[in-house]
Length: 122
Image 1 (cartoon, helix red, strand yellow):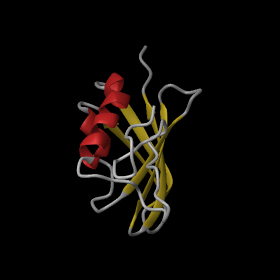
Image 2: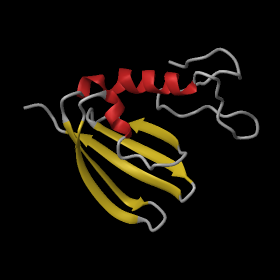
Image 3: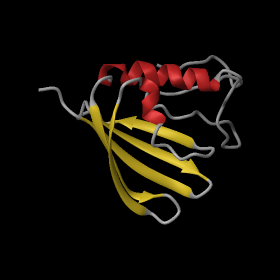
């Protein structure tokens, strides 16, 4: 499902990619953050109460290998491990793995890729 009806609106496709204008800039409006958090809520609410593991082989300016475990108590918790700076994000859900997501976060130190895996319910 694509949200929005014109080039002045914030638009995400099914993989949460920002649609871009002719110059390659994300299409945003005054409600961009609200739209993003609504989309995050819809996608991740089924995982509330679950733990998840975040891994990256190119985290930050020094491309560090990182691994961390978190608990999703609220869908906004998905942002707790994001860099403390301005960033852009692309989120893709693995179609063949219900609990696996890939995040590509770009910020002033470069672009980092993360794999997020939610613990399966027993």
